[in-house]
Image (cartoon, rainbow, N blue to C red; front, side):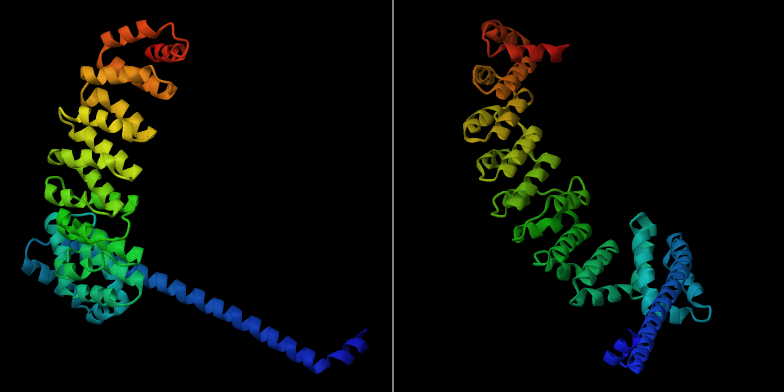
Length: 364
């Protein structure tokens, strides 16, 4: 067998292949070892810098005036090597992260002190350089940091990214301008052509302050072709109870989008007037079943007029068992007396018996 192998592959070649393979394995193991060693050193260095900068940040936050801030910074930079450290790119990144993290959890003068340190050390220029790079993840992180540190000088440049084709850049820019300017930052809704996701809408809402809503801007957004913008505008109407926009919200019940129609109904729950119930009854025949069920459930809240009771009574006599049950439930909420009359009239109707049984179980 050995003679056969030797006749095909010379022994010297086999030895050479074995040496090459051994060297390759050794090189891989050495690379892995060096990588792990470097990573361990980097983590250790990062932990040391975080502790060092945490002490600086803690002292900065409790400073009471500008001279005290400058004195604290000078005291930190005076030991040997500290000035070089503050000029080191890696160390500055760690410091920026620590400042942003701390800033998100404090407010008032302490937060202002952190912004002073951020600007005094020129860290905002570092962030803006990252913002200007072509790499999307650096741009996103830079916008988040600039917004967290209230750098309004860069507002216009960030605003230009609110309709960026890259969804990560676009959403980060939209959130950043709202963080910087509040409700006014939502003006990007007037020009954005991409969808504003449900998650993004919730994120934007979480950074708005009550009392700064402008109904005129919301009225404009309700007329936009971008369906997500209209839906978000209706959500704003619902949350901030913009009663002046009642008629515009009613008009949204005729929108092609089912999501918008349902959101319009949600908004009307919060801003209903004496005319809302009649508007709902007029819109009812034009809507799909989910919206119709929503209207039936809303009628006891927005106004139980005699006209509404007659309408609900016709639904009870219909063939849709689900609608019949919800309509009967609504009648009971509006007028127990009217409910008793309907039950008396229909109690012998075979199709009504299951509904009546269900209602009786609920009452118990």
